[in-house]
Length: 304
Image (cartoon, rainbow, N blue to C red; front, side, top):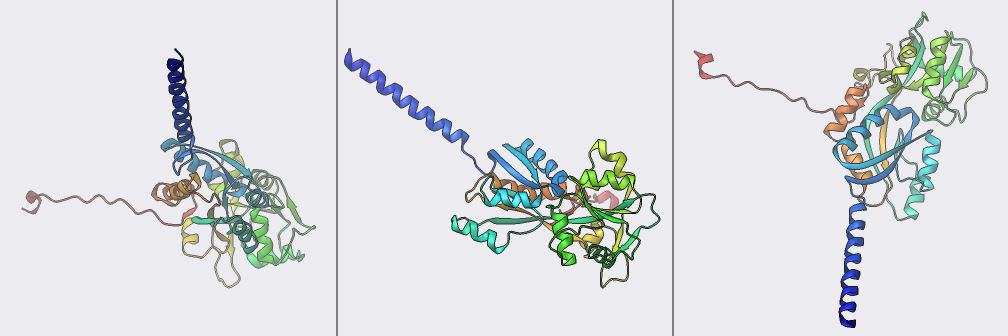
């Protein structure tokens, strides 16, 4: 009787071990399976929503998007709150050193070219702006027709981008305003003539349904660079040809340190399907997807 009890106990214990192992294996994250959190710069949110939706529909994966300002994304990344981020800049030397100390080499995947768009009320007579006038306004020269500049967030990537262009370290106190989101900037400009809003291009090309009425009331200004004679609109052609001065590369930064969803998602976004999603969004794919040509073979009767 005791021997039968011992045998039954042994078999049950083996079953538990095998069951636990199978459960662990089924929950293990791979490049195409599992759960992950993606930190996303708020100016880049619309196009990443599409990427996540398509990726999840094709694979057994769930990606939670955590939208923050650029400064908050970087902070979360270095504090190891999450290991995957979408940014409009690469990690700097100090940030890379933090991961080197953890024995992790971040993998940076460029996937698109975006544009910082300068928008104005559609009723405004001015459709052109020189970048030198915008920079001078930020530096305190109010001699141009610009009444004010409106940003989304003091810690956003658009603020950092424009501050760097103007050689500033923070938003000027006079004539420059900041709101919480890109949508708030669009709403404000749609209701106030003479103001110039600074937003990510994707918020204009892919507005939410409730924002369409406000987007219809604003227009993207054509911009002239320092060494340019003409003004160029923020569109795919001008970005591709290097004519629009306020263009920037976008990156997926993967700091997981193993072959997980960060690697799989980055490969997807940089691959054929992901690049087609970028193209459709109004941004410029990092790699332009090839066209599928349909070649018709002539039959012999056509030659007669």
